[in-house]
Length: 343
Ligand code: NDP
Image 1 (cartoon, rainbow, N blue to C red):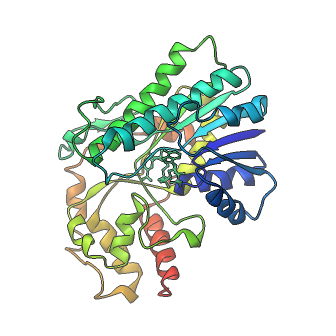
Image 2: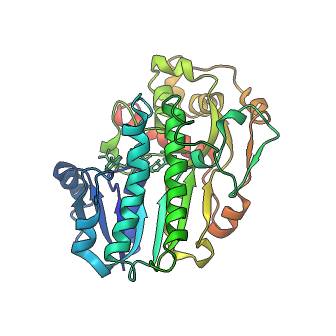
């Protein structure tokens, strides 16, 4: 069976591709340039079951048409992971909203045009950013579930990079559900979304450990490498999930009947920056005196002041336990230290 994965170079998508290949799927990945395609192909040992196609910009009109024209009815499953994650922009529409929303619409429109009767399942990588309302951040009485939606609109989310990113994920996910409703009699596929919170975990390939890591992993990278900006993260808090559990959920999302029409909220509980400091200091004594220590053990009190994510429906559908904070942080930190010759 052939699975199309958009944004195959991504941190999460590399694991998805790896898991798919391990389960003997044929994988078509879209990447932004030939150079990135060559590098990724090499990483995967030139696996003959992996084909890579260029989609330079998911937001360009008809961005995915050539891929569907080429492979047509072969594609049975589409995993749309590509979306901009950079929050360091002031061009909210150009850099976040338009690529996220139009990228999602483009891939769904391409299915409609070229594979309406052959694509059976579509999984859109959304985010908990599409679920939570960041204005409730300090309210411990708030509970989010698979039914919760970030109230952001196209206009209201254009405040800063974070709000625009959250808005981009909410609006892109909403566009996918709208598409299915509006095209129910035209397309065959069933939709599921995967909505992860902060994703930690090692890079699939050690070579991908750069000075700066993308999105959530940079929180751990800044701490482990004793970067000055770690100071400013001291009050930081959120919920976490390991990248390997996120990848696994993408496969379950199209393999399981129970996942049809569902939003799978991926979170294994709260963390504070203090918790990260405690784990790294305890488990990597070679960093003693070189990284932040904070006020050990004080993170737990803050958990009570944070909204709860109740994803019991998702856990029931997925049926596997998520990796603990200690495991995901340790594995992330160990890979960074290995790269720096400090393990
Ligand atoms: P990455 O930045 O590693 O991956 C993003 C992927 O999207 C890359 O392949 C990137 O290509 C591609 N991409 C971005 N913009 C475009 C564009 N305009 N045209 C073509 N391709 C594009 O991030 P993650 O792996 O962390 O994120 C993957 C998905 O998971 C995203 O949808 C993100 O919103 C979501 N997510 C991530 C979380 C996290 O904590 N990491 C949490 C919740 C959701 P290139 O490699 O060339 O830049």
